[in-house]
Image 1 (cartoon, protein in one colour):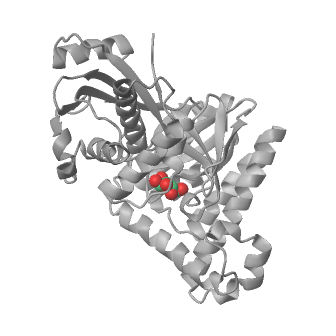
Image 2 (spheres, rainbow, N blue to C red; image 1 turned 180 degrees about the vertical axis):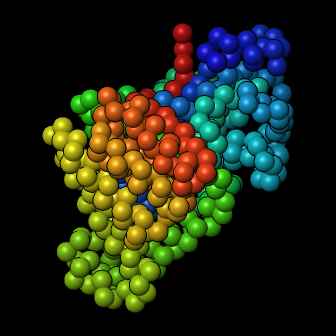
Length: 395
Ligand code: GLA
């Protein structure tokens, strides 16, 4: 649906009022390289994608927030004064979490009708929830600043942090900052090089010279992903504890160089934790090498690093699984594909592939065929450019 159609749909559902109808949008993300690094404090390299959440929003004159979505039948009403009571609802809890964090941050929350239009399939690892969080935070911060008479632009880094806090405090997933940051701060034709300890960031132009980012979705229904995710976080924390015997001042694994790691890894007494740490240490190196490769326009080198990252996630971090492995194996057999790996948390979800534009049809055909043979159903594909982050669409 385009914006005019969405506005029409909004009026069909919510009727007319004298308040303006406003449009806000925030994208999902694909992580190019730097996986399972954000909560270890290192550099990551995600890009915002051309799919995400659009919100049609209008202020109300009471203390209610009314939520609907174009792809759901739900009609959810949140009371601003009782915002902590929606943690268990199946849709609307992310929005409530955002409102709760904004209230804690001193924002003035006004009532509103909101229609959500999401173009990312839910739960496929492309950060549909970060897109919802950032877009929702942007709506209510914009409205709050208007109430306060503030004219400055909304601070989008803060929107990312609000999103992460909502996820941790309200939803109960101890995620890193990467997804919300990419959704809030993405830029056209660029990846975002983000230091997850300091939140310093730089845009890296994605000059892929005739290659495209092709995302392939396993279409696997994921379950128990947050407990497996939290397990990896704990294993890294435990590896860090061992290494702190030698490096008492380091606070994250990202502060340990590959040389120091090789010299002292024997102090990590648990082999699983050692493997996890090894992934983290070398993945950060690959991120930095990827930036150099992209700056030089060396797409083949970038693809090679993506492959190495994928192998490390499969064999050292162990977050892939039959479906992701099948997609990656099939992708790497296609001539025009120079890099393929899982992206996001793993255990299902999507892969990211760097594919020559001329080979995309062949890529889809061959990967579909081999995947269907092994797994029994088809994958989906999305071809994406790097996009701008969260914003109000005014026109
Ligand atoms: C999920 C989390 C992110 C990050 C990735 C793995 O997407 O939300 O914070 O940890 O997994 O890189």
